[in-house]
Image 1 (spheres, rainbow, N blue to C red):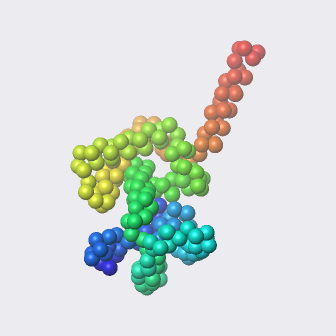
Image 2: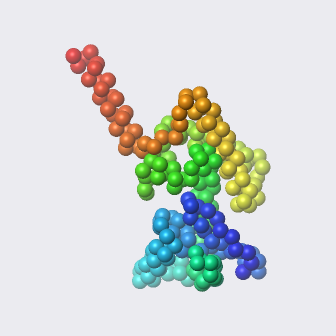
Image 3: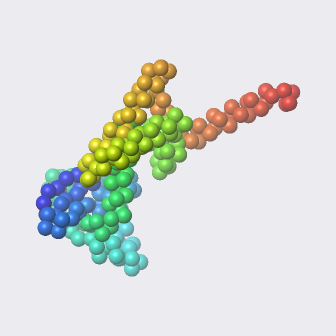
Length: 217
């Protein structure tokens, strides 16, 4: 196994290792599970994966377990321990994680916060962040994604690291637009309100206008 690196996903580290002989990336399954299920500690992620493995085995859905192998990776205590890893034959999982990492890079570049920090700012847990954005936030997020897409189509990045750079640059374009707008209006456009709160404000406003309508007098 050649070269161990970690990739960040919403403040979670996904340990990966490159196998030069097989020309394959292997990634820690427990890290992926921990990130996707938002486990707070490596221990809770390990416990969650252990329970999930047992459930899969009991149900006979052991294809994932068959494709897993164990390799030594550095743990939180700094020591090398055997951990379950998988290669790109769970390519859907790997691509999904990489997509989430790039989305996180874009969000961080334009808003100044990681996706997790942004969700915490709005008091969200499992809810989708985009579904809880204001119109201005959605427009800035779309600008960041569009800018990144246009840069990508022009430069044709060849690997994940180059895609990360494109994501950051696209995000910064929207970030600059956000800062200019905030300078004009004198306050942040990053709202701490979620969809429930926003909808409540709109509903109350509509009801207030309706009550003041001449038709109701």
